[in-house]
Structure formats: C-alpha cells, structure tokens
Image 1 (spheres, chains in turn yellow, purple):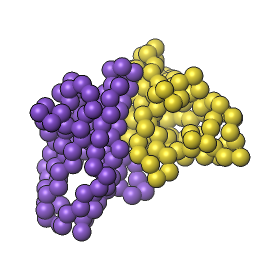
Image 2 (cartoon, rainbow over the protein chains, first blue to last red):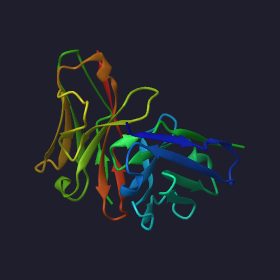
Image 3 (cartoon, rainbow over the protein chains, first blue to last red):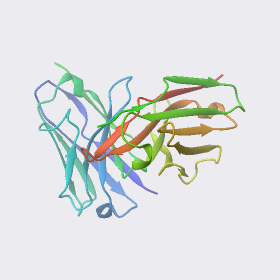
Image 4 (cartoon, rainbow over the protein chains, first blue to last red):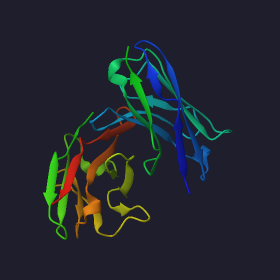
Length: 113
Length: 112
C-alpha cells in the first residue's frame, strides 16, 4: 500500500534553515507530481509547492517563493523541501502529497527563538 | 487567482444528511476538478472525493460529490451520518495562474 513518510521537522530559530524529506513506497514515484502542503496550528490547509514527475517543473506559493526549494530524487523515491530564512509564520505541520490522492502523516516545523 | 469559500461549520444528527458547499470566487467551477479531503482530529487529511465526484477506494457510498455551474460551486454530501464522520472537510482545486492548488477554508462537521 502507498506510504509517504516525512521527516526532518523540528524546532529552529527564525532566519535559520531546515530540510524536510518524504520517502515514498509502493508506487512508481517517478511517474507522479508531488506536493508539499502545510497546516499551521489550528488553521486550514495551505498549498506550498509542487514538483512535476521529472523534477524539472517546480511551482511555489507566493508566501514561500524565494525562500523554499522543492526537489526530488527519483532514484531514491524521495521528495525534499529546503526551507530557508524561516519565519515564525512558517510554523506548521508539513505534509507531502502524491498527486491529490495520498497524504503522508506530516512533520512539524516550529520556528521560535 | 481565485478563492474557495466553505461554511465554517455544519451540524446534524446521526442518520441525517449534510451538504457542504465550496464556492469559487472567479472563473468557472467546471474549469478545474475539485477534490474533497477529510481530516479527523489529530490525523492527516485523506482524500474522499477526487475529480468532482469520484470516490476514493474504500470511501463509503454515503459520500458523494457534485458541481453546480449555476452557483459556481462544488458540494460534498454525506448521507446516513455517523459519529465517525465528525471531521474537518476541505475542498481543493487547481489554480492555473500559479500551477498550484487552492484550498477552501474547511468545514467542521459535527454529528450531534
């Protein structure tokens, strides 16, 4: 069965960086677009970024453009999100999502001094 | 860009039917597929409806999706409500202007 397992979250100071990973299994990872979606505490869902199946096309929400970078390693079935210049309002659970049908369990990023 | 607007909450008794609306602010609701996600407390979202009206495998047929061009909205209907249906529900569609997704604000369903 499809599994998406995020890792890399934690507590980080404002202005610092963090790299999230999402390891996929039980489907042909290289054939699907992958998204990151986040959810601030007590708030709704916010789309963050998408990377197409081949890794060449990447698109971002305005709120993270220029600070976050999405990437993938199809040989390792892994999706990444590099978070730079982190701010307090980036505090959220970050989910990786396979093409609008499967979601991971999420990893919590807390930005605090 | 466009927004998707959902009611903040709905409540109904077990066995009854609720319908959650998702209204698109600009552009036709029919332009892009709508998905619906269920998020139970403390859990990750799961997909219940994709491509406007298709049920994900394993989702009971008590859940149904539709779109209505006259009101420019999508709807999720849950019939025969069960306590296990208590959750937040989010609609989502594709935004061609930034090649990304737009989510509705979410609707909390309470089964009284």
